[in-house]
Every structure is written in C-alpha cells, then in structure tokens.
Image (tube, rainbow, N blue to C red; front, side, top):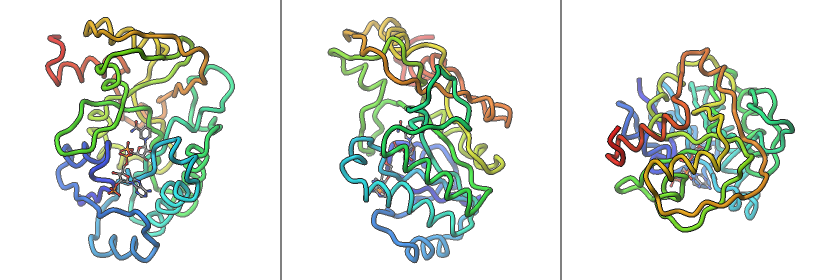
Length: 265
Ligand SMILES: NC(=O)c1ccc[n+]([C@@H]2O[C@H](COP(=O)([O-])OP(=O)(O)OC[C@H]3O[C@@H](n4cnc5c(N)ncnc54)[C@H](OP(=O)(O)O)[C@@H]3O)[C@@H](O)[C@H]2O)c1
C-alpha cells in the first residue's frame, strides 16, 4: 500500500513518516494549484493519501484568512478531486461554539474561529466530492521534540518547560499522544468515508489533567485557573465502534512518559 503523506516534516506528518512502512513524503503544497496537485498525485500513483499539511495555528489563520482558506479548504478540495482514497485531518476546534458540556458527537459541530470555520467547510466540500474520504477531527496532540523536525509548543513540552501556566478548571478537552494517533493511521484509512472524532477521551478538566502530569513528574510548574473556557470534549464512540480505540488521555500521557523513560511504570 503506497501512502503519500502531505506535510511530512510537520508535527503529525513526521511521526506518520517514522511509524508507517511505505509512507512516502509529498513535496510541499504551499501555493499549489489544482494542476500541480493532480500532476503530483498522477506521478506518484498512491493507493492512499494522508493529508496532514495545513495552516494549523489559530491566530495565524485569523491574521491571514486568504492563506488559511487556500491551505485549509482549497488544497484538500484539490486532493479530493483526484479521487484517491484520502484521510484528511480536521480539528476538535469545530466544537468551540457548542453549547452544553459535551462530550460532543460528530453531528454537533459549531465553530467559533476562522480556522475551525475553514476546517468545517473543508469537511463538507471534500465529502461532497468524494464520500469515501475519511475526515479525522483530532484533539490537541503532544510529544517530546523529534530530532530533525521543527519543534512546536504542545501540552507536554509546555509543562516540562515549567514556569506559570494557566488551564481552565471547567473546560473538558482531551490531549492525545501523537505517536498513538500516527500508529492508528493505516486502520483509520480503512474506515468507511465520513467524519470521525479522533483521539483520546478525557473526563477530566484541562486543569486536572495538568495537575496529574505535574504530580506524576514532580514538575516545578505553577498552575493557575484560566477560568471558564468552551469545552472541546469529543465523544469518540463512532471511531471505537469502527475498531479504532485510543487509550484515555491519562493512559496516553503515561505511555508517552514510559516511552521516553520519564517514568518507571
Ligand atoms: N497538532 C495538533 O495538536 C493538531 C490538533 C488538531 C488538529 N490538527 C490538524 O492535524 C493536521 C496536522 O497538524 P500538524 O500539527 O502536523 O501541522 P503543522 O506541523 O503545523 O503543519 C504541517 C505541515 O503543513 C504544511 N503547511 C504549513 N503551512 C502551510 C500552508 N500555508 N499551505 C500548505 N501547507 C502548509 C507544512 O509542510 P511543508 O513545509 O511541507 O509545506 C507543515 O510541515 C492539520 O490538519 C491540523 O489542522 C493538529
């Protein structure tokens, strides 16, 4: 199975490249047009595409709406037009405007920022073009920095850096070990087309999750309450029913700490 991975040096793409046999890196799609995308795909003849390339920073998207639209809507649409089986990443941010506590199922999305609005439009458009596309709404993911790959802030790295950090004592949201997300990608690619919440589930608030990690590693971080924030709590039942099961957020964190020798058990 030839898997073409877009964004192969990105946070998620680099882990997929490292963990999936037969994964091949796609050249950068920045500023790509439909002809370029078609030519790339025709040349490579992949059995599947895993599309991780995106403009994924919420504030960058707000500053550059046209750039976000091209990266987060138009490029995935160009890939969908190739009709190759594709897995495309979306985000739990599509739930940011939802009322109620969650956990949210796939049909309840209500974006509250430009990034999420573009991701939701992308989901609808790619599935219109090619209903067998698998859309994965991912949670916030973390890992230790990876050699040779640009680092980016994430929950674990931010906590390890120490200092003062604020998390909400009421916000329910999950964090997912990105290596677990990458490890499930071939199974995800075999799912029937549609939208899936993708990642660990977490019944704790973000402040409780951070407190757990602080205690587990004895970190010198000072945790403050960020006050009420919208829930981003996803129900991953549809994914589990389809046979793709993640550890809970705390189990995933424990796994990551063991993988890096940061905790004995
Ligand atoms: N990281 C998370 O915690 C998280 C959470 C929820 C959802 N997601 C989603 O998961 C996917 C992967 O996220 P990630 O964290 O791996 O993303 P990332 O590291 O920020 O970016 C992945 C790749 O996207 C390409 N890229 C950046 N700007 C671009 C632009 N303007 N146009 C086209 N390509 C561009 C770059 O590849 P090249 O240098 O090759 O162009 C980059 O390496 C994204 O769809 C993201 O929205 C991520």
